[in-house]
Length: 397
Image 1 (tube, one colour):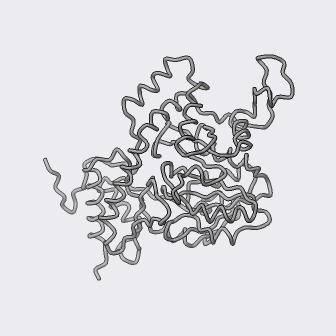
Image 2 (cartoon, rainbow, N blue to C red):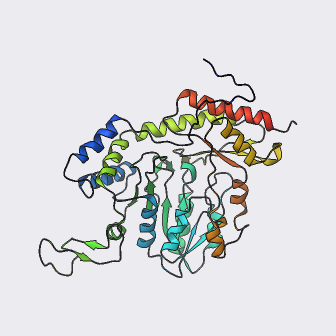
Image 3 (spheres, rainbow, N blue to C red):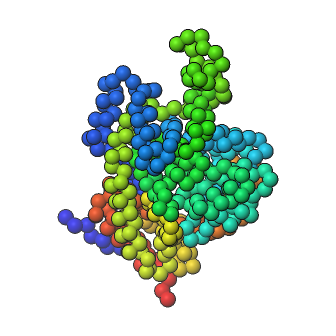
């Protein structure tokens, strides 16, 4: 029976999440195979998964971690961040992109965004560089790569390490080069709402052997069993702790799921692009709405789709629009609250108004559902829900 789309009747009967994993029988079988084998923690699947990711993006080395935050921590450690160092990053990101600097005793410095792409603006980065700056963490917001060519030019000029937070952008490219080859170290996340999932998981890829070796130590207690690196060798049981590392290791269970998911990555990314194109077509000519802008050199992998509702064009505020979409059972979200507005960062001395373009974006953005498992009807429901709310609250010209 068809659902009546009267004003007070929701578009959908059940809530549609903003993001969701897609696990099939092959994924389940891959994990079960590991459960029936000899290794469920540290085994051969981890290295196999690392090689899959490295080969896909075109990097020489990959190091898997238990989650993306741990991977970012590893990147900051490996970059040599310590007390007194400044690291420039975007305020428009999840907390981990700057928390990883704090873990090392460094100071996050927030540079404002490009108001079109929502990525960190290289011109803003240039204005924040001081003699204390050690690194740049560029965030590929929503799947669109940051302007890595300009960022790398700045880094070379000032002898800085570049870490690309590519939690959103596996499968994306910039200037014909895949994300994973554009920075000194690149972090990918495998959380369930990302392009592929390992449940929780993260990875750093790099082309530098020195960084690779430090990452390996960091994720596993600072311990090595490599005879070429040990001070002495007491026997086949012997190991040495060379650094103060952490237990940030991925398991074979996670890696097996990741290996299986990688066989579907290209299809997942293509489906995301198709949905984003449908949204753009449906919303681009609606008064008061701003669809995402794509940099001409970037090919996004569309982790998120943000629709901006310009407040001066509607009779209600963003909160009411958000709640109205939820009432239609459209699982909207907001990405992100500028990091420095968080109470913890406020206690560190950061103040509102630091990055006005990021704050202006935050006041008007709503994230729509976008994930490969969405059906044609799901996409149509989201479009119809937005059209319904837009029509209800827009200010007539």
